[in-house]
Length: 277
Image 1: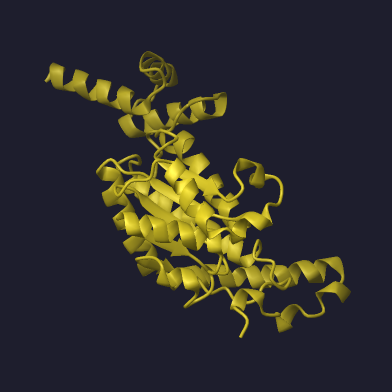
Image 2: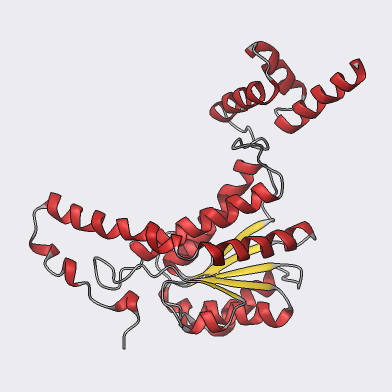
């Protein structure tokens, strides 16, 4: 039997004959199924987050690894963590089959090389302190399976995000996250619902991991790297909200003194308050 990601979707079997708006509605209807599928695997996501946090608290890293759309989504999520939460680029990394050239051009042949996944992790200096999450919509990609098996044998925490239950990769990791989104609107095009599900899960994993590590206060990114005008404006607003400062110029001056580090500005203000007591 074909994996669910490769099966034909009877609801969209005549999408090529529909007017543009009706075709879009069909795709939108399919997309509505994704959040429900992700909701069903929240317990597994929570377990994975807790294990990742343990590794990062003890000096480890989180590495996503995958091919094609899955690999690109991992690189995307990893690349957005440093500016959002002010951490180093090595803390969460995305590894994609075929290297970074595969981010903008197809590199499907590299998916079939089981040893290459392990080799790519070796080149990142993988140790038992790290966590590795394999991304494979179909759950059967040799490159990704080889990678997580190597990581598991090394003693890393391992998980996977796939959309096919009981697929090969689910048997190669400690925690399998499997949002079953069903057949795609275009048969086999897992950049659609499966990709959306993976993106949602990645957002959850990285965001809640950063929350658990203390890089968020309330729902504010208090460790944001203020590297452009928009982010500097956001940093000012966050500092004002966190400290109760009502004068914008005062907040701007405090941030300027702390090299636009919200955390340093807050800590500096707290230190002054303690000295005045």
